[in-house]
Amino acid sequence: MKENVRVEGDWLLVGEKAADEAVRLALSRIGRIAVVGAGKAGAGMAAGLLEALGPRVVAEKKVSGWVNVPADCVREIGPIHLHAARPAGMNEPTAEGVFGAKKILEIVSSLGADDLCICLISGGGSALMPAPVEGVSLEEKQAITRLLSAGGANIEELNTVRKQLSRIKGCGLVRACRAARLITLIISDVLGDPLDVIASGPTVADSRTPREALAILERYAGGNEHVAPGAFRYLRRMMAAEESKHPFSCAVTNLVIGNNAVAVDAAGIEAERRGYSHAMHAASKLEGAAEEVGRDLARMALKMASEAGPDCLITGGEPTVKLAAAEVRGKGGRNQQLVLAALMEMLNAECGVRNAEPKQESQRFCLLSAGTDGEDGPTDAAGAVIDADLIARLRASQLDPADYLRRNDAYSLFDRLGGLIKTGPTHTNVCDVRVVVFDRDR
Image (tube, rainbow, N blue to C red; front, side):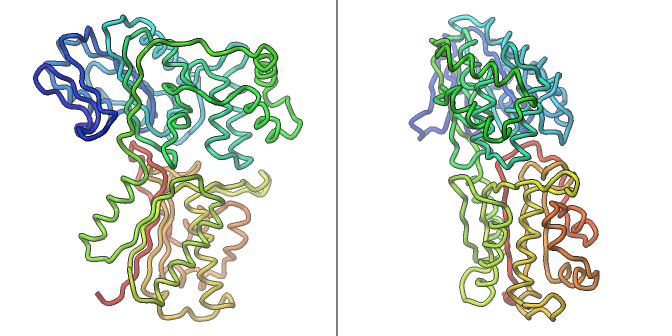
């Protein structure tokens, strides 16, 4: 935040100095500053913003606001209220989130033409800021989230539906804002940083249509409209009416100040500090299934082990997982599923048969994948890690990793083998980071 918000004399500068989108505002022409937003990084962003503005500006411009965050992020930071919009570890809209979203809409609609609104958006913002349209209940939105997630819907599909069923997403916050200017600072949790997708684009014009949202919902519902009848009725009514969204006159600037590439770069700096020769890649578009990403990562790792070149590979991204049937489904997350698939690929490639002795190069490697938010699926783990010691424990246990992979039960397997990564919530989210390292007697 402090790299992107600065006060220089009577000027407020927002954005990097060299960036084309940087904003320069005369403080003397600003009435008051209201801060709103939602996301896992909301608490840190709000605190950083207050520090960057400084006590003089905070007092003179009567800075205040409301930011929806997970319950474990709530703390006292002064004039910006941090609201517990959902319990920690539950990425679904709640009644508390609806209450907070209503407060946010009230704040922005109370502003005047000489006021400035600063919106703070980060990963998890969609679920933390629910504002269902009339005729659609919170319970229906929860059911839709579960339906799409269980069916393997990607973030674009999920947010297309969310935006059409929300009063605040898909530029809804801007339409409600009466300030002359609104600046949104964004920590992106979506690959490629599509502004209309991050937190479902509360300050970005929505190019999607009710027809597209209905098609997605129909595809994943498979004819079962009882899961959310109000949503189906609303979308069909909007299609028939061909209603356009209410226009807005607020000047809007959206700035991405953090993303997956920043995290991968930071990991590369640390790898270099530790003496590794590293290669890096941050995905710029949606990835495929976690299992295939894991197998690809394992194949790259095995190739690195047998060839000269980098001894550290750092990648970033966010794959998807299609859940097994509820009656057989275990416990896990996309990172744990990815690492388990990588483990199986290494076993198959190195040994051919399950109980054979591993090749020597596997004794000098470590592979991990973890969510930068410290959460991986509905678990208390950020992800998982494997090395030669874990492979040895797996062989001694006689457990069948294929069965755990098929049932999405990677957590149970890695819990027994000591391969879980538990960081606790990091209070941010910029997708996932994967690291492979080898010891080549450096």
